Length: 186
Image 1 (cartoon, rainbow, N blue to C red):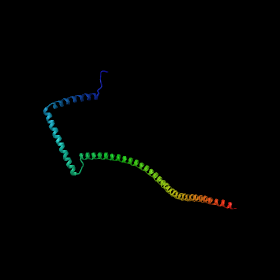
Image 2: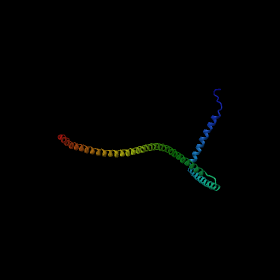
Image 3: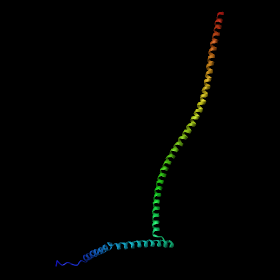
């Protein structure tokens, strides 16, 4: 009983498919090895390709008359859509770069505004200081004028003092002979 095998349909089908494959391959080899068959098949292929081309042209003409899209129209639309998406992505990137540059420029402008506020504050302080300095210069000029006047007055007083000293000396000289002359007559 152990010598007896059970029927396996898969194994039988496998053997039969291998046999068919070998026979079909041999048959195809015989045909393709024949020059006349190759020429006929080549002519058939050319006729078929011409027929397909003519059919394609007729379909495109009918589609244009009926205002229907053809395969090439859909391909063109798909290509245009892809190109449009790529351009939109490029524009988005440019917009992001512009936003970044605007942000950095706004920060720069803020710093410039802060600096200009400081400059304005300093210029106001300088203006105030300039006004004070002008007032002090005017006061200094008036003090200088007063000092010049006092100097002139002191000069006059010095001259008067010298005249007074000279007059005193003169009076003492003139008073001495009189004092000596009046005392000798007594």
